Length: 106
Image 1: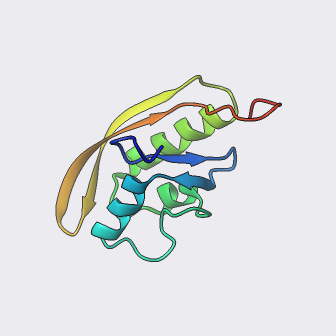
Image 2: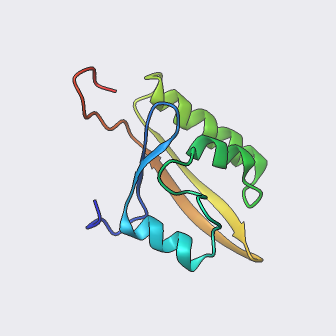
Image 3: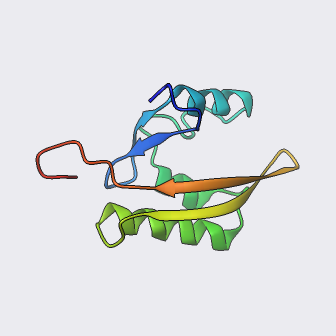
């Protein structure tokens, strides 16, 4: 997945990041994201809930969309959203799809 041009992570059903591609890691370094923020082992759902740079309505919608895909309530979740970091506002696109990799399809 390091060949993908997008910032990509794989999270498990609990929201824990189990894989982050090279672009995701580089984005974190370039933007000065502290320590484990967004790295393997961190919980993406917790990050979303606690994010100060995102509009609270978007955070709630993203959190719910990810959870619904994780529990099988939705097949996918797509959203455009804004993120504020160091007084700079940027637009992002989030796509959430199930990634099936074991016998019980989790």
